[in-house]
Length: 142
Image (cartoon, rainbow, N blue to C red; front, side, top):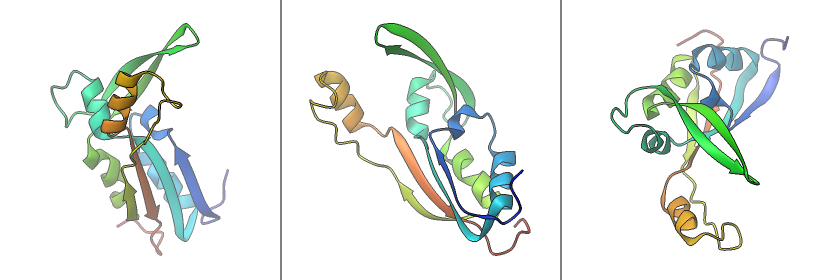
């Protein structure tokens, strides 16, 4: 177990979208961070998840699947897509202050992705969302 208020930084890179709910996770992250400690996270962008779902209800949190081809072997990945409010409200509810949000442009080249159609689709869409949040000075919930 990690001690209370013992960490300066928690990094969660492309892992949170595999969890159906972030409520308990954000409480645990807040517990282990020192006051002023930071959570840095990256997730699939909510609009990308919605476009990969049935596209009916953006506000729904739901399990979606993607089929990946890795060197000719197909694998099915499952992840939870959620609206933007469900990205930020668990942070806010746990007393985090969001101080940075980025929607990076990928800027892929033909060397990165030889397929023109795929490269253009990736470069013109929002694939990832980066967030940095600061733990509140008080350990009490807001």
